[in-house]
Image 1 (cartoon, rainbow, N blue to C red):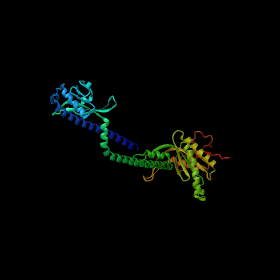
Image 2 (tube, rainbow, N blue to C red; image 1 turned 180 degrees about the vertical axis):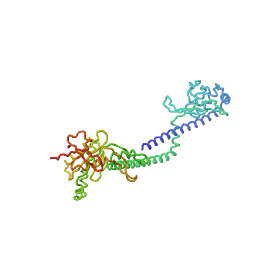
Image 3 (cartoon, rainbow, N blue to C red; image 1 turned 90 degrees about the vertical axis):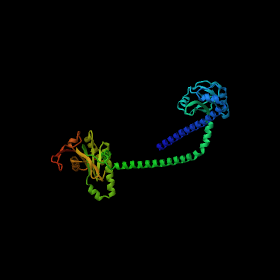
Image 4 (tube, rainbow, N blue to C red; image 1 turned 135 degrees about the vertical axis):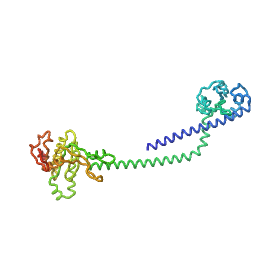
Length: 403
């Protein structure tokens, strides 16, 4: 829409400029014709004095001045001046102007370039006029004298307006209709673009709820070919899982199971986000989240405790166990180009899952190395994790039962 407004403004400005240029050209053409008429009449009325003038010897001839005065009266001119090549006024229909030297740039331009020029001005009585400078040329195209004619702007503008009104009305109306149609078309197009943009934003926001924030950032940072590079990171991982979920799902309707999972996942996702974590994926009744940056392990443990306390207070039909472990992982896109999953993989993820499996309902199992303050945790114990050669030292914390 702003581009259309700018286009219309430029079009109007060019039209006004072109009209003004055309108007001045018409004024100058009329002035040239009048100057030629005056020259023929004066040369016939005072041939000797006129010959001297054309020979570059401006005469002080009453006969020449009278011939000019007769033409001013005959053509009903407001004023007429005649200048020699030294810009001296050799004739002025106003007596006090005789003999003065004109210093204006328009007269200089007419003498130097042998071409007419127009200068708008306002007379002392408020009349708007054009000062029209018309060079008088000899047979070789050399300037012999310059006529200055005064034409009222309003009168000739009125003639031009009446002459051009009819040819301009139809194009103007058509242009107005075209502009109105374009305005409406652009308005509809802009509304459609805005609606589509809003729909795309809503769709993007909805799609982002299905993936982790890290996956969204990785997709935005991919190259032009869609390649998402893998990165090696150290993250604190939180893994949770529902206890006895299979039996619950078998004995409950799908609607009840879905409602339970939605309540449970809402509690977990909220606590994870509150502690600056990112949910990597929801795997049926299990959840994997990761924490990065300063105090990542402390925040992961705090999130796990908040989750277990909130679940206990919500009196859910099934409890969950949580494992927390900090270690090195690889974050990247897994799968073909048609269907990929951005996730974290590595031994550390497996260890977090094993710690989760070792936790009973309502219990948090944490690697002892991830606890900066374990005052509320049970004493350290050795846990042998399947697939690992060396045992882990872990500590447990159980959510208090609400009274």
